[in-house]
Each structure stands twice: as structure tokens, then as C-alpha cells.
Image (cartoon, rainbow, N blue to C red):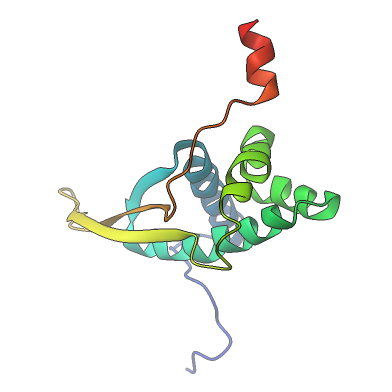
Length: 133
């Protein structure tokens, strides 16, 4: 059987489960800045999150709505568009880095950390300031 035209890893899951997995991983990466997962999932997440970051950097209404659709929570989408994307304007691609870490004890799977290449500064949002006051 030929392998032409079959992009992306299956992860032994059906389509809806795969989409939910990538949304969840992308949301966690945006919220925490760095996460640890298996190497194949990290490599697939790079393809997914790079496209979201590119849309977030444009920042118009249509792209903002596509980013909201691409992550699990609206708070994570707003953080990506309003806080993270403006700090990544110096790059055209390669916003995230995958580093191999260890072999998982239970099944020997290769683990990897995925995080943003540039050091992100935490900025206080106006909503957070209203809560404090």
C-alpha cells in the first residue's frame, strides 16, 4: 500500500479523539508555556500550534475566531492572541521547540518537552487587574 497523501499521525484514535487530543495539548502549552508529552504527540503538536500562532499574529476578527475554534478554552485563545503572539512577531516560523527528555518507566515511550523558543514575559491583563482591585 502506498503512503502518498496520508498526512498526520493517527495515534490509534478516531478523528474526533485526535482533534480533541491536539486541542487539549495546544491549550495546555498556551497556559503553561512548556509541557511534557510523548515525542510523536509533540511533533504533531508543532504542526498544529504553528498554524494557530500564525493566525494569532494576524489578530483580525476572522483569525481570532479560528484560534478560538482551535483551542479548548476561550481564555487560552485570548492569551495566545493578546499576550503571546505580539511577543513572537520577530519570527516567521519555528516558534516552538521539541526536546527529547527521557524514556517513560511504564512502557519505555520516548518523552519530550515542547515549549516556546523565545522567553515569554508575563503581562498583566486588564481583566486580571480588575479582579485584584
